[in-house]
Image (tube, rainbow, N blue to C red):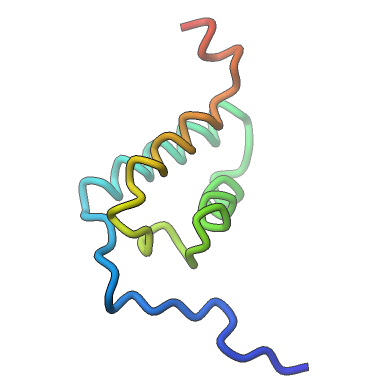
Length: 83
């Protein structure tokens, strides 16, 4: 079975997140992984799957706020309550 165009992503018409936005997203991914005791790669993969992108660098800039909300929602409730 041959699967063509699997994970093909055309970024030519889409403006991706900038360096500072990418840094914020990466930091949140690391925090979520640490606080939830998950592998960082797993959190990043779940993030990419949620936004249907091959990797974090391909996140369209227009989805930045939704990405931050998604990651904050991944923090366990008991951690938020303790803060």
